[in-house]
Image 1 (tube, rainbow, N blue to C red):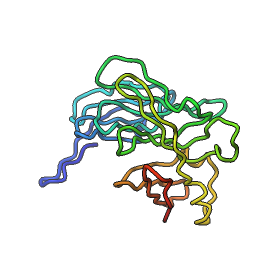
Image 2: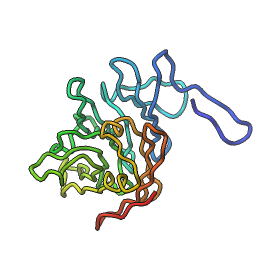
Image 3: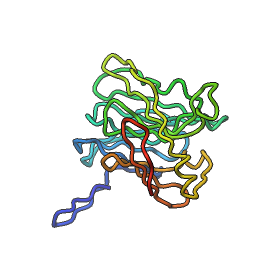
Image 4: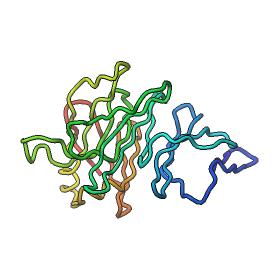
Length: 212
């Protein structure tokens, strides 16, 4: 639904059909809405924010769409039905091109959301490597692809899971495959399955301290 907040209040139906539409994301200019159809096989769709249009499939099986700050791309993730691990992708919206996989060095990448800095994307996941436990499941900022589809820079671990442990919260990593995320300034807000809403400030460097 689209609801005008100015008087007179008006509600307009944007999508139809029996399949639930969830995880809506509005483009920065307000012209587009990305969402997930939550029925088999489901996926990420894109639709104009004005009524009378049909959603365009962006990624079958896709979850958690998030627009880039310039509105020219979407990031989303797809869950493997066998391992339950995720892979993250960026789909350009301003040109015809195949989605580009990001966070390739991660065995699991989910809960993706574009950061306010267009060069970085947040993922919750496990980076592949021999430095266990330094590479264990946590929140990371990974480089977003540039205009030449290059991803420049090293992923940065944010240390959110240790901060949650200090708060007395010890969620299983799978909880965050079902969590919802949003940015308010430089703060990352997420709602987990317990309906608790931790807040974690995220800075570029050095790794931040965390607060609730």
